[in-house]
Image (cartoon, rainbow, N blue to C red; front, top):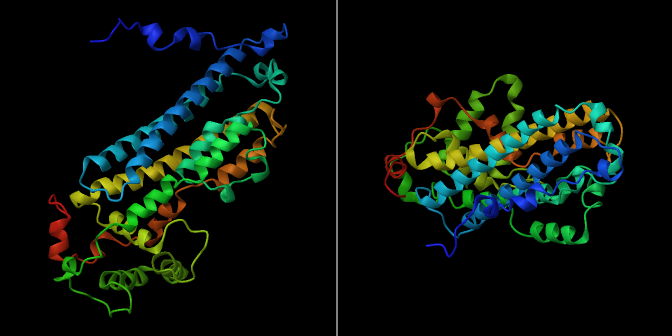
Length: 349
């Protein structure tokens, strides 16, 4: 039993929350009605960002384990919480609809009172991007990245950037996939293409089928195929290893097997998170253009131009998204061995 009765207002600390909206326009004796909406919207964003970070850290803790049973509660928990992150980001996008009930003239009533405060100072959003896997070297406008943050916020972000990100942990998880590590899984596999030195027979077959599936004007795709899955012409910028890419493609190809359902949902949710972040950036950019045109942001950024650059560059899970370039038709997929089919059922691998 609790030591005392819990009251709704006390539990939610509503006295603090509901008295945390101080209008700068009122402090300048120039009351602007829509400033209240502006404050509450951004406070709501920061609360959602806190929840997103809370979920990401819990997911990273699970994904950082030495092994995860893909038929286990651990992976179910990861998928559940990643779905929550994606859903929160959808809400973040829809909050822009509320913000856009404010007109440009409404915003001008108090905009100048905000300088040099800016959404660019949202350290929680930057931290969430970093924990998902966006590296400093991949950011647009690196000179602005931490220029307006307080020192304690900069230190916090840099500390977290040194930890394995969710993308790093996903790469390690994919590399541990046991599909091709045990010859016992492939005793009754019937090859259809000549063997290639150092390449598993399944992938020799798949490479042969993929190459034959390409139209004449798509032949350049095969060079990319070799690079992505076999490391030919290694790209230092890549985040997923060839082994991880092979595992991810295998999951996408054979997702109908029960054991691969949760891994497939995990990969799909990473793409959903990227899509929602991209949608949020696009809506934010469009709203800024609608509100202030080509003027600079209150924090001194280039406004719409900066947001456009971030929109074009800040894709975190793009290597997973690009795997769709290497799919072939379901009816042409290589048949799996009897041993592996049995293990991809409901029995544990």
